[in-house]
Length: 330
Image (cartoon, rainbow, N blue to C red; front, top):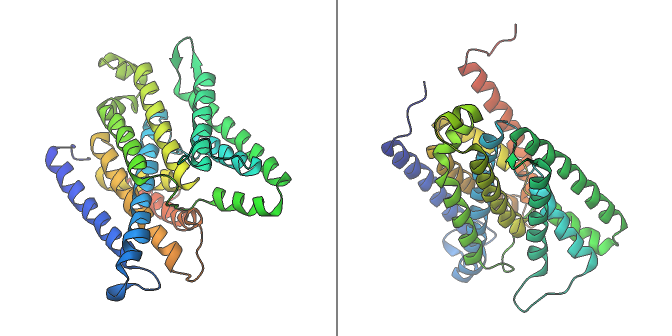
């Protein structure tokens, strides 16, 4: 039986994962060709630490969105990548690359802006397709997201096919996912992530009931439609903020919530903050490995999260079945 999400458990979990995140940030700041005690402070201050902070914000955002989507849709495979929001952002960025769109205003980077607009467009399409008579249905939301994602991927493939070699290289770099600094101020990203996280935490106790079923939630006084709409919009906008900075980083939003749930249980009052901290630490470490392990070459962090996350997810699945007494096949 899973222990209840008490204030003491929340404090202990936050302390442990917060310490893990702090350790990951220190490791990221000291890792590199000039790492260790001899690392130049300007490199740490201007390059490594800002990049690590962006990775923490992106990883935390994608992980907490994955946890929210899985509860919202009552589907363990739900994630920001599967639901099409990430695909819409990628399509917006690819279109900006192909069309060589100029900056709309000084200080407003084109690529992140059009990626975020693509996410907004995807949110609108999916929301409209899944709404019926004022109700936002979980099953329809999942189907609409999967179909929209397939369309966005196909559209990106067409744009990729017609692009010249120079643009093709930029498109591939974007769609594989990597941590970028210097385009979007860290303060802007942090503010967007903070607002989205606060909105999801506000509905954490309602997500506990929605994950059981709409009928149970309604009987206990929860407006299932309004809650689902709020959570969907908050998680989608949070996904958009992450994708606009880093491009699509797959598997993190699927794997991390399951890994955290294995240790802390399904109560979203504990699961959501733990997923944020766990996702932040995971992506900081993954990005550090992506830029340091194969130096002087750097691999896209989105590739590394998939390579590491997929086997880890299988191990997690086997252990969870063994814990439930289903470790052997009939």
